[in-house]
Length: 68
Image (tube, rainbow, N blue to C red; front, side, top):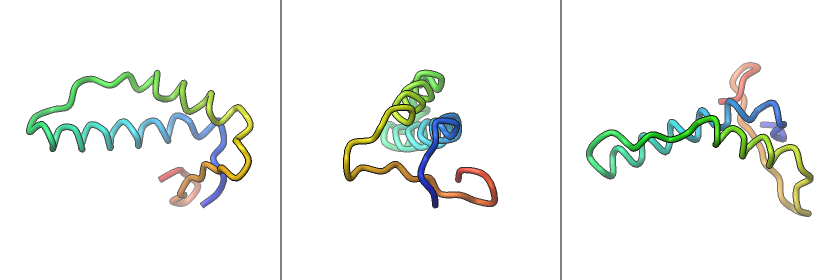
């Protein structure tokens, strides 16, 4: 694990969108509605580009050299 960086935004968004699709699809019994992955990525990038509030940290898990 390590602190998340702005350049991790695409990987974080990919993982988040996949998780949402799987969870919502399972709950609804069919494929989840479309989710704008670019919007999710932009939100993560903006979040990681600004200073975090005191005591707050965003961490990413690593597998090899990539975010897992």
